[in-house]
Length: 183
Image (cartoon, rainbow, N blue to C red; front, side, top):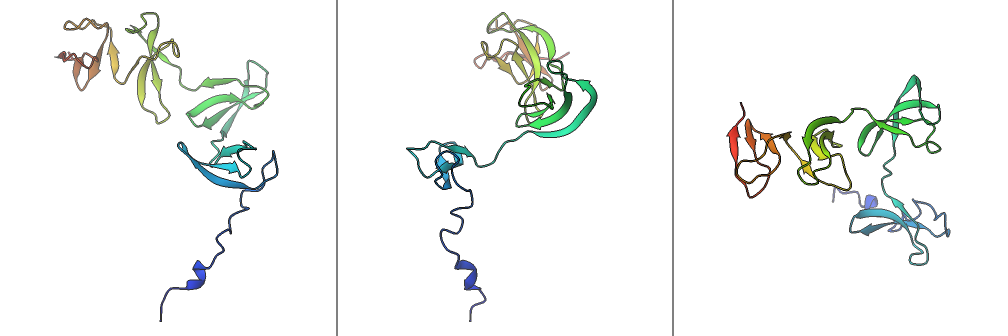
């Protein structure tokens, strides 16, 4: 006699078929589909109907309303919100008002971008909390450093900026091996 309860495996193969409801555009059932960027919910009427939505909605959640702080665009109350790129300050009157502001202001390093020579490198934080330094002329200039920039010219290759890395001052250029101790 087997200790496995075979009734657990007798579910109908199409038991979850209508779990996602019907397409709001054409009324046909919605199913999980796969693409190169991962699973999503799509209409079974494809290619006639192109309705799709993400499997996991990346919605913004409201964490705390800032009483007494008004939106500069519509005078509604501002709130601390969390979205897919981290926390930010946003208007509670969304989607009518799209005002947002970062919680932490960007710090200017007073180092000129060595790539475009127009912008300044500013301290930024990614969605995981890791600090990096990027040109403030983004998206026109996409220069990024993962270490603190130093406003010095590399004596070996002439690159306009060096970085602080593991107690040393180094050149960020891949072909250059310049290093000196950070004093």
